[in-house]
Every structure is written in structure tokens, then in C-alpha cells.
Image (cartoon, rainbow, N blue to C red; front, side, top):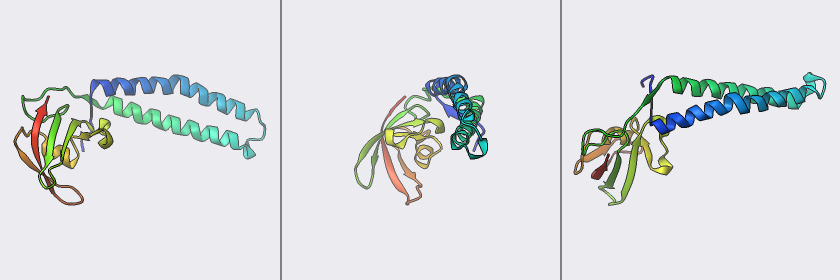
Length: 156
């Protein structure tokens, strides 16, 4: 897997805002919790202090994770070649076996959400669909077995 995190400009902006919030508002809240817990006395038997320190550790870990993602972000642009499936495309597919139709959006791994029908270009289905065009039938190699999809429409 590459060291880059593919995402839209919108997702990049969301992560930037989240980082700003964690480094300002949330960090002050946790510092206040620690300060308040210290005032309760003996730290060796102070569960509030332990919880606040644990929360601080989680916060710093999350800040480091978001910083790494932002530092290695690769902004994807909607476009691609006309009629070809690419990052940012909305693809209407039909399951060849069942006839069920679905519309998926191909996104970077940081934005994937199968519940919202947003699949990563690195997923088995995403890899099978990328660079194909309307009318093509693709075989998706999934953990539960292979299945075929026919591409009914591509919107870039």
C-alpha cells in the first residue's frame, strides 16, 4: 500500500478542522480535567486523574494520526477520462447473477463508507471498476467468492 492517503479536498478540509479543534478546544478541556482531578488529592488512588491522563493519551494519539494523514494526503480531483470509472466517479452497476442495481461512488480510502455506498479505489470492487467504462462486465474477487457486475452508467 502506498504512503499517500487519497481523499477529496472536502475530506482534507474536514480533517484540518478536526485537527484544529483537537489541538485547541479539546486539548484545553482535557488539561482542565487533569487540573481538576489533581485537586482531589492523592494521585495514587485517584481514578479521575487516571481517566483524564488516559483521555489525554488518546487525544495525543489521535492528533498524531490525523497529522500523519494530512501530511501524506493526496487530493483527488473528479474527472478522469470521459466515460471511464475513476476516483470521484458515480457508477451504476447491476449484479449479473441477481439483477440487483446499485450506485456507488469511488473514493479514496479515507472517505470509504460502504453504508453510504462510497467504496475505496483500493477495495476489491473499486479495483475491478477503475478504468472500465459503461457496458463493461467486471469480475470482483471478494473474500466470499467472485461475482460479476455490469456497468450501466458512469458519471464523472
